Length: 93
Image 1 (cartoon, one colour):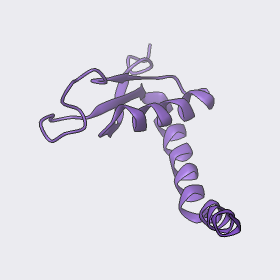
Image 2 (cartoon, rainbow, N blue to C red; image 1 turned 135 degrees about the horizontal axis):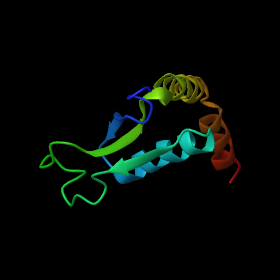
Image 3 (cartoon, rainbow, N blue to C red; image 1 turned 180 degrees about the vertical axis):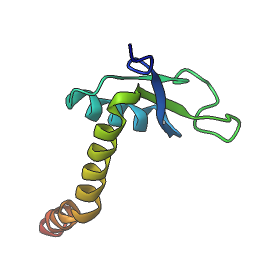
């Protein structure tokens, strides 16, 4: 029996619950179970907390989660079209 089958790991730390929730939603949408911890810490978001909001996944899903995050990062870094579109709309007003 594989003891690490259901082992959870901290996949990422975030300074705010909002950022953590966005990534959590992306993972869950791609069938990667996950959960947050430390999201109710009143000091998250300022320098008084040692850790921010933590996103946990199963260790067996780490590779899939990393691939998804790489894909998301590559798309968001390369896609500046929304900036151009919003500037054009502003100019038309």
